[in-house]
Amino acid sequence: MTRSNSRFLLLFEILNFLINHDWFFWLIGKFNARGWIRSIFLSYPANYEYAREYAYKFRIGKWKIRLTGFLWQNGKIVIMFSIFVVEEKEFLKKENREKLEEVVRYMEKIRRLVRADEKTFAGILPGLLLKRKIVDKTPEADITVSIIIEAVELVKKKIKLDEKIPIVVLGGRGFIGKMMVDKLKSVQKSDIYVVDLTGCNDKWPGRETRKIIINVARYNTIGFYLHMLRAGDVILNEAYPSPSSGVVSKIKSLNCDCFHIVGVEAISFPQFTQVYNGGIPCCAAWNSGDRNIIIKKLT
Image (tube, rainbow, N blue to C red):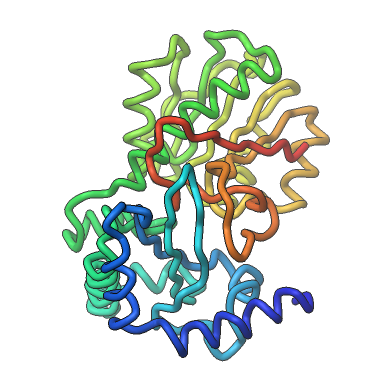
């Protein structure tokens, strides 16, 4: 952890002590008549390294909601909170359902206090919460899908791909994947192939055929399919975090292009780290008509 990060951690420890209270959020709500605060967002770290960017060691593994940042996108504020559960499998355990419900209740209470339009959740949480009927809508899923569709068009233009190039969707039977496949089929001229680790997969395009592979599964899923790539293929990763350096090196050695969807151009305090620097993730963004999406080339 760098010295600057250490200062941010101390600052947010102080901020949480002073202002992470109902009375403060109520006060913010009184001054939010013009709707400057658009939404509140709950994140969680993908791994221990990400967790240490935002919390001291004694915070990691805890479910307590902490204020961790402020985002400024297209003239509106998003307030970011985090829980520091670093293992996604903790969310899936039946015995933790009550903890998930409490997290959602608290986020809804904050949303009402600050008079924000919506609350959003990171990672697997939107699909899981909807499946368990803890929430009844997922605005972050809609914007994520729309950003991915835009990113596909950006990549096609950037490296001059054929408009009808086949598209393979990794994780195409998951929560985001199903929505995205439906949308792709309605707006793309390409053949769409659905691949998922759960089985019941479409056959891949022929090995001689150049293709775009979109990853909306887990971040390490790409590694399972490296043997299916051919020179010239294009990987577009949306999963958090971005592919590991080892996977990126293997993709590069196969003469394939690899891009990561960062999200939306915005200002964040503190800045997001690593590949997300300069933007905010799809699930944290709000659906502004004049947003600018960011993709970063990894190879």
